[in-house]
Image (cartoon, rainbow, N blue to C red; front, side, top):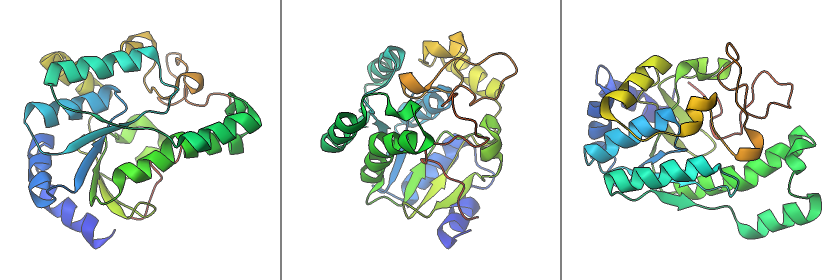
Amino acid sequence: MSEAAKYIKEVTAGLSPVEALIRLAELFPGEIVFSTSFGWEDQVISHIIFSNNIPIKVFTLETGRLFRETYSVWASTMDRYKKPIHAYYPNNELVEQMVNAKGPNSFYESVENRKECCGIRKIEPLKRALKGNKLWITGIRADQSVNRHDMEDVEWDEQNQLAKFHPIFNWTLEDVKAYIKQYNIPYNSLHDKGFPSIGCAPCTRAVAEGEDFRAGRWWWEDQSKKECGLHEVTAK
Protein backbone atom coordinates (compact mmCIF):
# COMPACT_ATOMS: atom_id res chain seq x y z
CA MET A 1 0.00 0.00 0.00
CA SER A 2 1.33 3.45 -0.92
CA GLU A 3 2.14 6.06 1.71
CA ALA A 4 -0.82 8.14 0.56
CA ALA A 5 -3.20 5.20 0.94
CA LYS A 6 -1.75 4.35 4.37
CA TYR A 7 -2.28 7.93 5.51
CA ILE A 8 -5.92 7.93 4.36
CA LYS A 9 -6.53 4.59 6.04
CA GLU A 10 -5.12 5.98 9.30
CA VAL A 11 -7.14 9.21 9.32
CA THR A 12 -10.40 7.45 8.43
CA ALA A 13 -10.03 4.52 10.84
CA GLY A 14 -13.09 4.23 13.06
CA LEU A 15 -14.97 7.07 11.34
CA SER A 16 -18.45 6.82 9.86
CA PRO A 17 -18.78 7.51 6.12
CA VAL A 18 -20.02 11.04 6.89
CA GLU A 19 -17.18 11.75 9.30
CA ALA A 20 -14.60 10.25 6.94
CA LEU A 21 -15.71 12.32 3.94
CA ILE A 22 -15.80 15.53 5.97
CA ARG A 23 -12.27 14.83 7.24
CA LEU A 24 -10.91 13.96 3.79
CA ALA A 25 -12.46 17.06 2.22
CA GLU A 26 -10.57 19.10 4.81
CA LEU A 27 -7.30 17.31 4.08
CA PHE A 28 -7.62 17.46 0.26
CA PRO A 29 -9.39 20.77 -0.50
CA GLY A 30 -10.12 21.08 -4.22
CA GLU A 31 -8.36 17.76 -4.89
CA ILE A 32 -11.06 15.23 -3.99
CA VAL A 33 -13.79 13.94 -6.33
CA PHE A 34 -16.61 11.40 -6.25
CA SER A 35 -17.73 9.45 -9.33
CA THR A 36 -21.37 8.45 -9.57
CA SER A 37 -23.19 6.17 -11.99
CA PHE A 38 -26.45 6.72 -10.08
CA GLY A 39 -26.68 3.20 -8.69
CA TRP A 40 -27.85 2.43 -5.14
CA GLU A 41 -24.43 2.85 -3.55
CA ASP A 42 -23.58 6.04 -5.41
CA GLN A 43 -26.89 7.60 -4.44
CA VAL A 44 -26.07 6.96 -0.78
CA ILE A 45 -22.73 8.75 -1.12
CA SER A 46 -24.22 11.60 -3.16
CA HIS A 47 -26.78 12.09 -0.38
CA ILE A 48 -24.03 12.21 2.25
CA ILE A 49 -22.01 14.75 0.25
CA PHE A 50 -24.90 16.96 -0.81
CA SER A 51 -26.96 16.93 2.40
CA ASN A 52 -23.92 17.74 4.52
CA ASN A 53 -22.55 20.33 2.07
CA ILE A 54 -19.21 18.52 1.93
CA PRO A 55 -16.95 20.24 -0.63
CA ILE A 56 -16.35 17.21 -2.85
CA LYS A 57 -16.89 17.52 -6.60
CA VAL A 58 -19.40 14.97 -7.90
CA PHE A 59 -19.05 13.80 -11.50
CA THR A 60 -20.44 11.17 -13.83
CA LEU A 61 -19.35 9.58 -17.09
CA GLU A 62 -21.93 10.25 -19.82
CA THR A 63 -21.15 7.40 -22.20
CA GLY A 64 -23.97 8.21 -24.61
CA ARG A 65 -25.49 4.74 -24.10
CA LEU A 66 -27.20 5.11 -20.71
CA PHE A 67 -30.68 3.90 -19.78
CA ARG A 68 -33.59 6.34 -19.81
CA GLU A 69 -34.10 5.49 -16.13
CA THR A 70 -30.54 6.56 -15.37
CA TYR A 71 -31.14 9.99 -16.87
CA SER A 72 -34.31 10.20 -14.81
CA VAL A 73 -32.56 9.57 -11.48
CA TRP A 74 -29.77 11.95 -12.54
CA ALA A 75 -32.35 14.71 -13.04
CA SER A 76 -34.25 13.90 -9.84
CA THR A 77 -31.01 13.93 -7.83
CA MET A 78 -30.10 17.40 -9.07
CA ASP A 79 -33.64 18.58 -8.38
CA ARG A 80 -33.60 17.15 -4.85
CA TYR A 81 -30.27 18.57 -3.70
CA LYS A 82 -29.88 21.62 -5.97
CA LYS A 83 -26.21 20.71 -6.48
CA PRO A 84 -24.22 20.28 -9.71
CA ILE A 85 -23.22 16.89 -11.08
CA HIS A 86 -20.43 17.35 -13.61
CA ALA A 87 -20.72 15.30 -16.80
CA TYR A 88 -17.71 14.01 -18.72
CA TYR A 89 -18.39 12.90 -22.29
CA PRO A 90 -16.24 10.68 -24.53
CA ASN A 91 -14.07 12.25 -27.22
CA ASN A 92 -16.47 12.51 -30.18
CA GLU A 93 -13.76 11.89 -32.78
CA LEU A 94 -12.77 8.60 -31.13
CA VAL A 95 -16.41 7.48 -30.93
CA GLU A 96 -16.98 8.39 -34.57
CA GLN A 97 -13.87 6.50 -35.72
CA MET A 98 -14.87 3.37 -33.78
CA VAL A 99 -18.49 3.37 -34.95
CA ASN A 100 -17.59 4.21 -38.55
CA ALA A 101 -15.12 1.33 -38.69
CA LYS A 102 -16.97 -1.31 -36.69
CA GLY A 103 -20.61 -0.26 -36.37
CA PRO A 104 -22.64 0.69 -33.28
CA ASN A 105 -22.62 -2.75 -31.62
CA SER A 106 -19.03 -3.92 -32.11
CA PHE A 107 -18.68 -4.62 -28.37
CA TYR A 108 -20.77 -7.79 -28.78
CA GLU A 109 -18.27 -9.26 -31.23
CA SER A 110 -15.21 -9.72 -29.00
CA VAL A 111 -13.77 -8.91 -25.60
CA GLU A 112 -11.20 -6.71 -27.36
CA ASN A 113 -13.93 -4.68 -29.05
CA ARG A 114 -15.86 -4.36 -25.80
CA LYS A 115 -12.78 -3.11 -23.98
CA GLU A 116 -12.11 -0.67 -26.80
CA CYS A 117 -15.61 0.75 -26.39
CA CYS A 118 -15.23 0.97 -22.60
CA GLY A 119 -11.87 2.63 -23.11
CA ILE A 120 -13.30 5.32 -25.36
CA ARG A 121 -16.59 5.90 -23.56
CA LYS A 122 -15.41 5.50 -19.96
CA ILE A 123 -11.67 5.25 -19.33
CA GLU A 124 -10.54 8.29 -21.34
CA PRO A 125 -13.24 10.60 -19.87
CA LEU A 126 -12.41 9.26 -16.40
CA LYS A 127 -8.77 10.26 -16.80
CA ARG A 128 -9.88 13.81 -17.58
CA ALA A 129 -12.22 13.84 -14.60
CA LEU A 130 -9.50 12.65 -12.22
CA LYS A 131 -6.69 14.82 -13.57
CA GLY A 132 -5.24 17.16 -10.96
CA ASN A 133 -6.91 15.37 -8.03
CA LYS A 134 -5.34 13.39 -5.21
CA LEU A 135 -8.29 11.37 -3.93
CA TRP A 136 -11.11 9.53 -5.71
CA ILE A 137 -14.22 8.52 -3.76
CA THR A 138 -16.27 5.56 -5.06
CA GLY A 139 -19.33 3.54 -4.09
CA ILE A 140 -17.61 0.16 -4.31
CA ARG A 141 -18.67 -2.51 -1.81
CA ALA A 142 -16.76 -5.71 -1.10
CA ASP A 143 -19.65 -8.08 -1.81
CA GLN A 144 -20.49 -6.67 -5.25
CA SER A 145 -18.30 -9.25 -6.99
CA VAL A 146 -15.57 -11.81 -6.40
CA ASN A 147 -13.06 -9.38 -7.88
CA ARG A 148 -13.99 -6.68 -5.40
CA HIS A 149 -13.43 -8.96 -2.41
CA ASP A 150 -9.74 -8.61 -3.28
CA MET A 151 -9.88 -4.85 -2.77
CA GLU A 152 -9.57 -2.80 0.42
CA ASP A 153 -11.46 0.29 1.50
CA VAL A 154 -8.39 2.39 0.67
CA GLU A 155 -6.22 1.73 -2.37
CA TRP A 156 -3.62 3.30 -4.60
CA ASP A 157 -4.73 3.65 -8.22
CA GLU A 158 -1.52 3.22 -10.20
CA GLN A 159 -2.92 4.03 -13.63
CA ASN A 160 -4.42 7.34 -12.46
CA GLN A 161 -1.79 8.09 -9.81
CA LEU A 162 -4.11 8.89 -6.92
CA ALA A 163 -5.62 7.27 -3.86
CA LYS A 164 -9.12 5.75 -3.81
CA PHE A 165 -11.44 5.56 -0.82
CA HIS A 166 -14.60 3.45 -0.67
CA PRO A 167 -16.57 4.83 2.32
CA ILE A 168 -19.28 2.13 2.36
CA PHE A 169 -16.98 -0.73 1.39
CA ASN A 170 -18.15 -3.00 4.22
CA TRP A 171 -21.86 -2.23 3.91
CA THR A 172 -24.20 -4.98 2.79
CA LEU A 173 -26.80 -4.43 0.09
CA GLU A 174 -29.44 -4.50 2.83
CA ASP A 175 -27.58 -1.69 4.62
CA VAL A 176 -27.67 0.35 1.42
CA LYS A 177 -31.37 -0.27 0.80
CA ALA A 178 -32.25 0.58 4.40
CA TYR A 179 -30.32 3.86 4.20
CA ILE A 180 -32.06 4.83 0.96
CA LYS A 181 -35.44 4.09 2.50
CA GLN A 182 -34.63 5.96 5.71
CA TYR A 183 -33.70 9.18 3.89
CA ASN A 184 -36.07 8.76 0.94
CA ILE A 185 -33.15 9.05 -1.50
CA PRO A 186 -33.93 9.01 -5.25
CA TYR A 187 -32.76 5.76 -6.85
CA ASN A 188 -32.80 4.08 -10.24
CA SER A 189 -36.13 2.29 -10.82
CA LEU A 190 -34.28 -0.46 -12.71
CA HIS A 191 -33.11 -1.76 -9.34
CA ASP A 192 -36.71 -2.82 -8.70
CA LYS A 193 -36.69 -4.79 -11.97
CA GLY A 194 -33.74 -7.08 -11.24
CA PHE A 195 -30.86 -4.76 -12.16
CA PRO A 196 -28.46 -4.66 -9.18
CA SER A 197 -25.62 -3.22 -11.29
CA ILE A 198 -26.47 -0.71 -14.01
CA GLY A 199 -24.15 0.45 -16.78
CA CYS A 200 -24.71 1.19 -20.44
CA ALA A 201 -28.07 0.00 -21.76
CA PRO A 202 -26.75 -2.38 -24.48
CA CYS A 203 -24.39 -4.02 -21.99
CA THR A 204 -26.66 -4.53 -18.98
CA ARG A 205 -29.48 -6.99 -18.33
CA ALA A 206 -31.51 -8.02 -15.30
CA VAL A 207 -30.19 -10.93 -13.23
CA ALA A 208 -32.07 -13.96 -11.95
CA GLU A 209 -32.42 -14.66 -8.24
CA GLY A 210 -29.21 -16.20 -6.95
CA GLU A 211 -27.03 -14.89 -9.78
CA ASP A 212 -23.90 -12.89 -9.05
CA PHE A 213 -24.38 -9.17 -8.46
CA ARG A 214 -22.58 -8.32 -11.72
CA ALA A 215 -23.84 -11.22 -13.83
CA GLY A 216 -25.94 -8.79 -15.84
CA ARG A 217 -22.92 -6.80 -17.02
CA TRP A 218 -21.45 -7.99 -20.36
CA TRP A 219 -23.44 -11.19 -19.87
CA TRP A 220 -22.36 -12.62 -23.23
CA GLU A 221 -18.74 -12.87 -22.09
CA ASP A 222 -17.55 -16.06 -20.40
CA GLN A 223 -15.30 -14.45 -17.82
CA SER A 224 -15.04 -14.71 -14.05
CA LYS A 225 -13.85 -11.11 -13.67
CA LYS A 226 -15.91 -8.79 -15.79
CA GLU A 227 -14.72 -5.24 -15.18
CA CYS A 228 -14.49 -2.35 -17.63
CA GLY A 229 -11.17 -1.11 -16.29
CA LEU A 230 -12.46 1.72 -14.10
CA HIS A 231 -11.73 -0.22 -10.93
CA GLU A 232 -8.82 -2.58 -11.35
CA VAL A 233 -7.50 -4.38 -8.29
CA THR A 234 -4.38 -2.39 -7.54
CA ALA A 235 -1.38 -2.59 -5.25
CA LYS A 236 -2.11 -2.79 -1.54
